[in-house]
Length: 357
Image 1 (cartoon, rainbow, N blue to C red):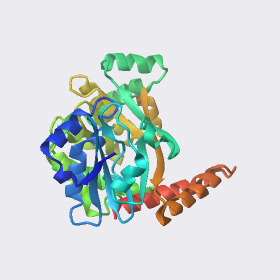
Image 2: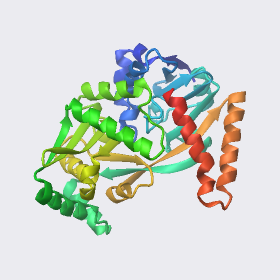
Image 3: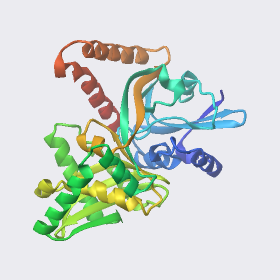
Image 4: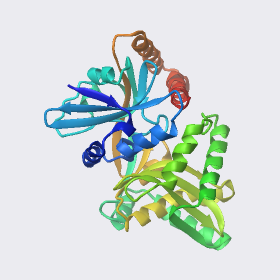
């Protein structure tokens, strides 16, 4: 399996076009786009990370796999800001994942959001979770009826809260594809405060993440970029979302809201506005990402499974990762309650730190 490792900027225009053309449904996440890899490369320029694309050629078939390479290991391009990984390739393309690792010039490839349908990676998976999706390809009215039939009252509750907000604060105004840089700045400030309050890693405590968001927002086109959505109540900013989008799918990314409007659930109202707006747009799916949040479960009517694990060549780096997974597996098998999850949480936090530095 011939593999050529290139930086995204070295890809020819033909390669970018072929890669994009291979992004059929199921592989059409914006995180799997050549434009994502190129944006990450620009944002991280001058840092210790290198974004590489493994270009696979096999007969008439071809495939593309982007990764972040540092030292002897690789992870998702743009990790921890990236929510999907996978080879975008021709139907029937055979992928030797160990050859892929070697082609990237590393000893180990770590993955945390690998598409479960990527069969070559299945035997290397150590865990599995679902990304939750609101599919409105049949129209918002059909989606609304499906949620009602399923016994989910999130849309009805949102309508009540919207009316309450209008009575008590004034006009509730939704703006899609906003270019309001001040709103983007406020989103980042709210998000950083939320991460600090919940003792989570501050993803903006490194320069490249902010550069990535701002470039994707500024240069967004209908086919790719970061789209900003705002909700104002009585003229005051109540909620802001920045979502990555491709040609037909929007992926939930960075969300935050004004605590002063908490009682109206402005974040949920903004999601509902986006879903309604999508009915008249080219986009038919809102991917809410993985995570056990009630609002995701209530808004979603479809799922996309992802796996975590690693592919390693014989090396100290692979032995170390295997040992860490061994500790995690042992803890999860014990009846320790919430403490059973501590090794997995520590592992995720360390991986976020690795990706950000």
